Image (cartoon, rainbow over all chains, first blue to last red; front, top):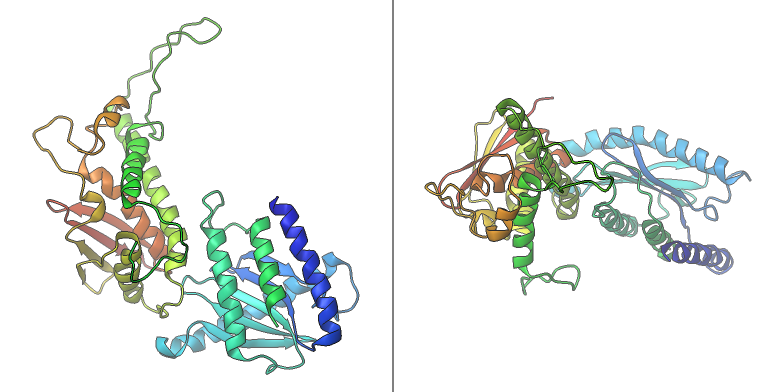
Length: 178
Length: 217
């Protein structure tokens, strides 16, 4: 049942993007990644419709490219974390801002108190397409979904998240963003 | 549970069920099928008719090793729970840059979430040792130490506990009920970036001191 609902949400997300590209010029989530404290990936999902202006490639290649982009951005995350520690805790809630602009995408980062890192690629034309508050809200929703997935006692902590339910939630969050 | 601050989900659970669960977890792991030295009740014969040899008795050294392994397992369960739970309580909290701030977070927010109160006293020697004192530790509230009794008196474990006898010392000792919380605290702190070792000491009644020793590096 969970699988079928997941598939349902995915198809909605595709059709939503189709409508969106015609009527509203809003950017979309191209990729959502969750990385643990050791920089090991826990979850990475590419939304092909939003990442579509990358050169036409197979799914596997697009996914691979996205992996590379996200991995490279981890260097920027480390730099930002150093800068973050210099600030007082009150001034910053873990939002790292726009990490980089890669082709048609802007990468945003967020780090939690538990040293989980979230990286989101948003379709954009420059680093200032999105308000910080909008992106923060997106991260917060994603974080809530991850917490839900972690509370499942039948998974191993620090193991990649493999869950149809979680994927469906991420799809839903990505679809509603914009 | 608290009407001023409703839980994120509407679902609620009676507190007593959690208390009972905690007690049964301890019984299961220390004296029941979860114990390393657990010997299941021997059936008189296996299906093919051969009689089973009697279970070998453990030497004192083996028994001690099994008891340590058993405690490690129970602590591991606590560690896992703490690991997962802290993710939830650390949301929207101020960033914790130092060990002290992480420990403070555990004393306040984490304790509040798990035990509905704060840690009463936090002491530190500023060299990586933190002592968290809870004067009325919730999970010891229903356990009493009965020095005279051979059973070691864990009142609420009661008759069920007597069924699942084990080769491991007296059962239902108050110390058994702080193994899981030690793991819980350790798991939570590790997740927050503080590698540590946690031990507990019961100081009469329901007062409990948790010592957190930070492991360097």
